[in-house]
Length: 173
Image 1 (spheres, rainbow, N blue to C red):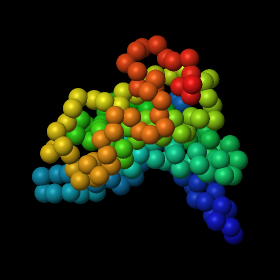
Image 2: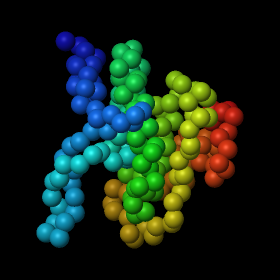
Image 3: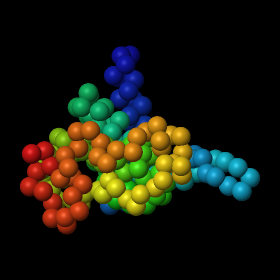
Image 4: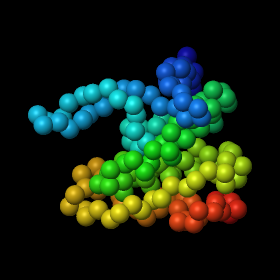
């Protein structure tokens, strides 16, 4: 079995485990949660982030679609990124600035996952605001500081983050 065949097998298991609602999908899994007695594991729906959420799953499945041509991976990647985009505003302020745990990572994943669809997809859906209310660096975790607090991820056109309610003609222009 080749590496790609192995990846396709794993990808199909991931895709089959997706929980769908309308055009969005997510997964349920063990996630760390802070409690009074310290961190513990709990089962919950994935969040929107790139590091451990649906934006990251979407990006992996989109890459698997590009490598294998399996349309299942494209469909599930688009469902996962729809979930991430719809939930990006739910990220807590202290976590929302990092590339891995915040809005910039969700935005970058959305652009990368959506590239094959070009304007037809991106001009019909709302953009993600990359910059929530400012959070002092002292309140960020190490992973959030290390992930960088970029205003926009590299490669993401500024029009994607416009405060204007009108979508751009093309985010790739």
